[in-house]
Length: 62
Image 1: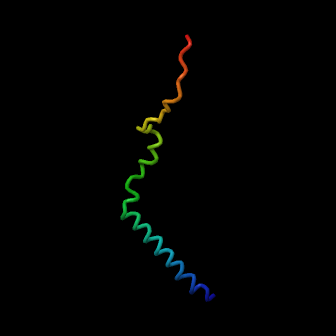
Image 2: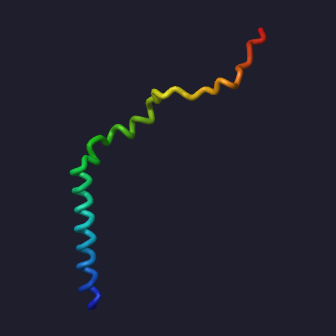
Image 3: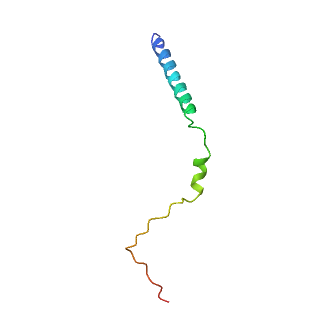
């Protein structure tokens, strides 16, 4: 039963650390744009693919 006197302060310390990390994340604007990452997969990138110029494309035989 005496272990409860050790576990309760440790649990309270963990809760305080978790609350502190949460408020730090809110203060540093981690939760401002929740929609961008879920929608960004639907759009193409503006970056053009790097095409190797040394490879010649086959010519049309018609």
